[in-house]
Length: 203
Picture 1: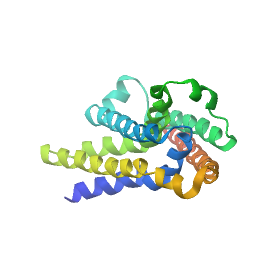
Picture 2: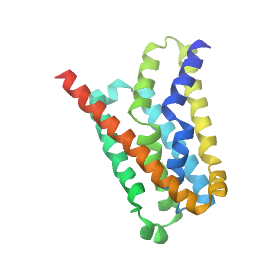
Picture 3: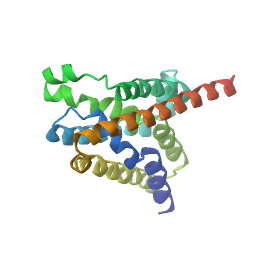
């Protein structure tokens, strides 16, 4: 139970459901309510798939691809920075959204929402560490259950994010998009800075 609680708390801090909700609303602001709900499930599903891959393979996947964790962190930071700039300046893909199919419109749930926002370097590293520390089927199950609970909380936050739209109205959502863009930019820059620091320390 101690391991389960540690996994839940750690993953919730990294996933940050309250902090990701305005970002989710900003990225999906051009979607209908039904499409937004689908995007929430797709984002969590993508995050679960990515986390599961690293839970099974872990460090072996990175070693096989000859990719270090700092490199993964830097790439994720740059991708998030591009999304943040779109949110800040309101330059998204509105025109392409209008002509796209529902499947294409909700594809933003996979990238950047599912990964690297939810299943990012922090989540991946934490997953690898927890599974390396776990010994036996019982502890492995505890880690999996903890990750599942954390993702379920994130799903609830994203699934019912429409309540925020009803409260703040479209104008408020636009304001949230700008604020979320600034926060996301800061997160992206921090990820890139940590990546550079790790490379320097390793040199």
